[in-house]
Amino acid sequence: ITRIGVFTSGGDAPGMNAAIRAVVRTALHHDKKVTGIYHGYQGMIDNTMFDMDSKSVSSIIQKGGTVLKTARCMEFKTVEGRAKAYENIRAAGIDALVAIGGDGTFTGAEIFSREFDIPVTCIPGTIDNDLNGTDLTIGYDTANNTVIEAIDKIRDTAASHNRLFFVEVMGRDSGCIALNAGVAGGAEAILLPEKDTAIDELIEMLEHAADRNKSSMIVIVAEGDKNGGANNVAKRVNEKFDYYDTKVSILGHLQRGGAPSSADRVLATRMGYAAVNELLKGNTRATMGVRGSEMVTTPLEEALSKKELKLNEDLVEIAKIMAL
Ligand code: ADP
Image (cartoon, rainbow, N blue to C red):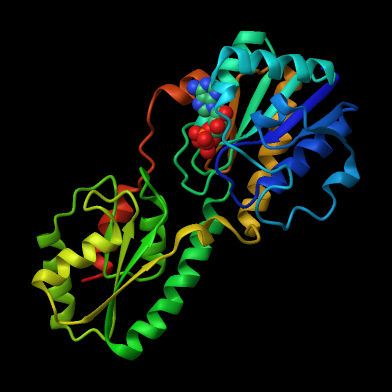
């Protein structure tokens, strides 16, 4: 391996820049050259690449988003698109890749690597914490912190008006953010995509809380909750339960942004370092992960084939007790 190409792809997450920085500096440490590829797979096809040195990653560790930009690229899903991408990266002298992204990015990397026999390692970057082979993904901790900051603010206004708030947080398939932020923000109830909470059951919980004369109530609704999101839940609850003045707040994309937390910066740095070292050791088609405090790697094929349940069941129970 003489030149490593690095890119971010799919959904962005805070801490991706810290990972890019670690990839670049670890590669340079091993006397390897680095090419930055803009806009993920799209940049390979469009040939938007540039030579990176240590300075190209100065002062980015603290920045949200990704300096390499990201994109969703349909053309890469075709054989012709991937052939064009391969031609361009070979012409640029790239003979190994580090991909930073989510499930889709990993799928593309796995296919591309097999098709053209190019070494690749992957770094899990997504706020949803829904990737296999790791306890934590880059961006998850920052998103949790962003969400509890928002919940705390909503709590202030909710308590002043005796209001019931339905706060929708990101997580189409994964309730990790909702659960974590719900516990940290002292939510009265949490609706998760992994659990089927009936509206009647929710109303019971709220009535119980109302009986205790709570000055405010907050229900966290993961966007993938089976009742159809915070607006629908609020509407259906209101039909039967009108004790409180009700409001809905959908946090949306602000959850993706912001300066990465200390934990995400460190995690991203360790993963970027590992991704280059594993490549150089010949451990290709692998994704980086952390288990407890240990760094681990998992073959991409394995990481993509099964679905790890990330939701902490103990915490689901604890959350209910805390809301009693
Ligand atoms: P994420 O990486 O966050 O899950 P996407 O699902 O959008 O985001 O995937 C990112 C990109 O990875 C896609 O836009 C596409 O270019 C590439 N990709 C996803 N699935 C495939 C696939 N089956 N074959 C080739 N490329 C893929």
